[in-house]
Length: 392
Image 1 (tube, rainbow, N blue to C red):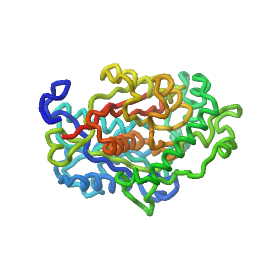
Image 2: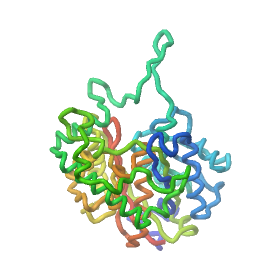
Image 3: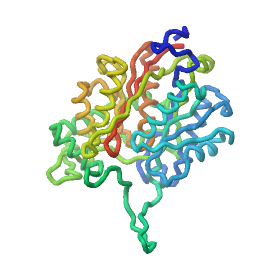
Image 4: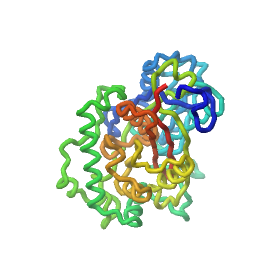
């Protein structure tokens, strides 16, 4: 990436987006280690750590963009930025595309660089399920009717809970209980091995006495997984053992232009393109297959099995269905485990995938290595983003 003309789209170094720093909190079980910590307080230390990692002055940041799914409104990105000590002249923007919010925030920052709207952005996501406010509809008489989640699709279309949708996916795409359990076990074993080898250390920002992801189950066995009953349908195959845990967490990356990146880092993830696609809400878990197909058709990435791929593991059923649809080998993605082991802090999970991609790419140190992040979303949507690791 030394020459201005090396970008295939003919962009100059001022409008080529690059991610040069990425950090995340260890994920904690909802109502666990972070149970009394608000979303802005989870995000603030991650924002500070990303800036410190490259020695970038906070007053040179153009905006702070964070995804969030269960908050009570307001602007958690602005609140987090101020809590982090970022100067008041730096604004904040909060994005809600549910589970894809964190990745959407990163993509938006990259698009702003491409458009020439700025040079430096902090982007990512945060979720505090533990402190999320109660939600209620107000009746004509002022009475409150509390509900667990927002509506994502018309009831006539179908707006199932995530677990029911995962059962729908398992049935439609013939994903057996055995495959789901085997994949879940692989995720836990991979994550445990990665933690033991220290592959998460450089990306983690300890908080609240937690320095390791709380969802790791190092002694999980096939026999133990087989004991879990169906969680969402009496004759179903989706269980607590092959589903992710609800988690609190935060992740953030520093997105800047290639021209500026050279002053602060020797390498990074160069953003190429992204696609977001809608699909049937009744099988929301396969949205990432549709967004990835659209993206890969545009970018021309031939065999994604040769790339670094991070795909959020809400349920083993939907991961395997997407893998089948894309021709992905489960042995070739989420090589350090995924959300089935590490947990799923909704609004942060897409950004966690990007943090993981940068860490893995730096370990591989192969210039031009493609990297793909993808996630399916509530309401029937998928978002995918493609990068490559480059030396500057």
